[in-house]
Image (tube, rainbow, N blue to C red; front, side, top):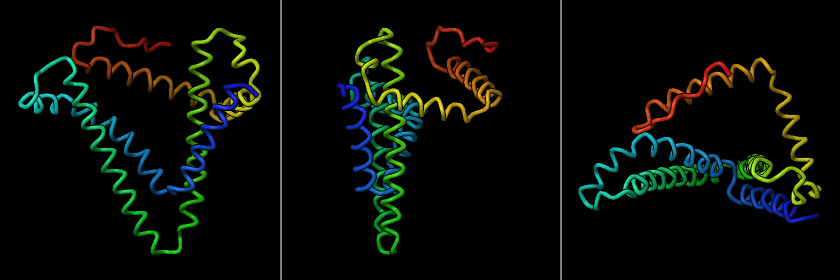
Length: 187
């Protein structure tokens, strides 16, 4: 077992324990907070920047500060909502189900994060790097990823890819000051 194996196992165990403690409702609220936080921060960062200019020097970091303020506020609100919902559900005899579903959801989150880490590592590190080549757990993660990817039909994958490329091109056109061309839609 090498460092990568220890990191993979530690990550998955951390998420399992966290999911078991927090439960499904709070885990979903946390994930929703992050997703909605990024969405609302990206969408309303400009307005927040204009508002904050009244109180702070308009420097190069003000847009980043605006993004962070919106993101944190949305995450806090979603986590509070999850906490309140869980508090109400604690009165019902569904606590064990909430924790069991939380464990399963957190396990899934841990595996997905592990997928992402392995993809990033294999993208940036040279092939045959001992960190990946000597790992005992990494081949299982890659196998499970390939198995899940195989469940998606090639036709469905190509349609999804085309929609993603189209949306990415549309988004790049809407970003102020973006000088890059949208991605080729014929790939």
